[in-house]
Image (tube, rainbow, N blue to C red; front, side):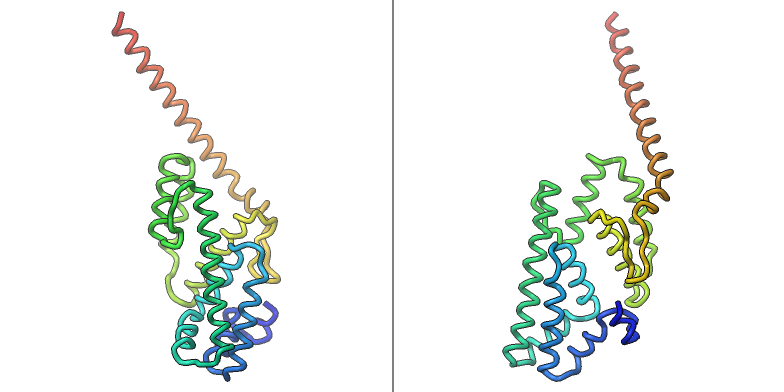
Length: 222
């Protein structure tokens, strides 16, 4: 974030991407080695994948493809290979965590397949999550889809969801902006309580109808 401020970047790491596009082979090799080092500082696959996707959203994937086609320098190509191999390992590790959590063999990298599984789980075993899921989907549909502010908003949501999953005490947007998870939880407490009341009402109505049906069947027998 400090580097972003010094270089007056609209999006962090864009300066590194520019180096990979235009600079000399040796400089590009060192730049890509730095990126690989940054990605390897994390202990969890989730953190690495999130940062890797941030680089890819800046166009790194296309740059690496061009380097593989046009470059012959073995040290630079070794860094390209390291980036791609680490990406496969991290994605497989993250996918395995999702398989363990869902109890199903699925390809979580396939957005359609992953979303279908989410809809199935919420629709069958976790119906109390239908309202918040509906709110999330509607919000995503309304978000801008452009490559500037739209992409930034999507990454904000991704970052918030990731940090909530990690159960961090603070949601960090940059070095100076943080939001307390406790404050966010308090802000939605009323909605949670309302949803719990609706679930309880549904349960009571269901039990009432079952008892009513049972009473009617016993009456017919008499």
